[in-house]
Length: 288
Image 1 (cartoon, helix red, strand yellow):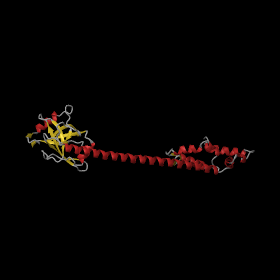
Image 2 (spheres, one colour):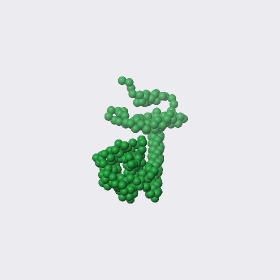
Image 3 (cartoon, one colour):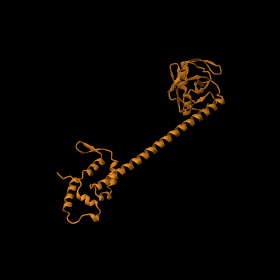
């Protein structure tokens, strides 16, 4: 209920109390021009209550289109809008003060219309409604009580639906968090296994593990962006680092350093020094 709607039209009409009057296009222009929400904002009500209450919405503005008077509703209670959309209140009418100003727009149940021929208001889903002219008529207490009950039921349904949606969202978030946690543990374990296997294969020194190699590689896992480390080949930092470690050829020095200290050879380190230079050459590219 946010679009302009026809509420009255020019012609001869009989009010609810039996008064017949001819309404001209000039009269409609006077109603629209006279309407000032700052002085009196016409409410949307049920029936035609004398005290204009309770209000389920307000008329923001009026305008004339040919021989039709149009009203722009606003601040309509969501539960009431749902009832209108469902066709609970198909008949509508307006109440006009003796000076020709709009008093309110009343939503009616089974009351026969006083003005025929107004264009139906279309809602998504095909619900229809008409707005009718009437001068004075009181809404029955039974009708108001019925409306209050229906509003309470609609509110209860909406709150239940919102609660179920919130519950489902929380469950989805919890499932996603659990999956992410399991995935992180699995990846960390895979890296730990990679390091242990590298030590056994003589390609990773135990000292590297002690210095935090596993944690370093785990942090590389979070870097998902790919880089071109070599011409024409893009890899993630972790993938490249694994390939770099795997490229180390088995060498007696790695195997010796992987053994307990009491089993490591001592004496001639010339071969070890040569290997150290080879490794340094791999890690630090030679200057051009």
